Image (cartoon, helix red, strand yellow):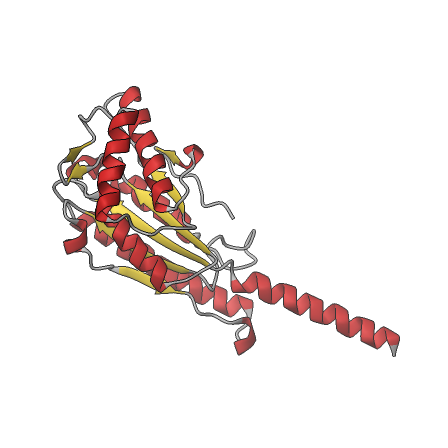
Length: 247
């Protein structure tokens, strides 16, 4: 009897562990693509980075995919007037359930098909659009809307952009972003009402500038800006190349 009880307990633990792994990590990933003219040469890198985020593998293939079967992914573009041009063209929730009779192999293969379709949609989005200017700060209001809609344990914002704000009277290509100037800009934005991005982890890919000095000044601005919004942008997650979303 004790052996049967022990075997039953081991089986239950195994099933619960499998279900937990299968369910994914509960992430909401929002991706923003800067489609201003200055990013034209970076579009392939942006698409490659998006495909890395999708992580097109079935569960059990080498390792559990970073984007799980309970996660959400959405994407939009940054333009010179991001709020008025937003259409949220990519928006998908993975809804496979371990308990609904779908085995991991079946659900995994369905997820792969869906992820490949999302990659195709991103390719179309990046090839069709070119905007004047980069209204990055207002695009954060889109991020606020997405994360308020999809309440997950881990909200993640990935921005594919050179991070050169060129809208609303700002021009980060030429602005002298001293500590004093950064403080003044953030106070000005706070007066308008900053987007609520509390708990969000931010990744920036494609960051660029005309000099290393300007690059560091722009990076410093965005680190402080996101902190004011309640989000976290680590220096290690701000750069030219996309690395990965940490678990």
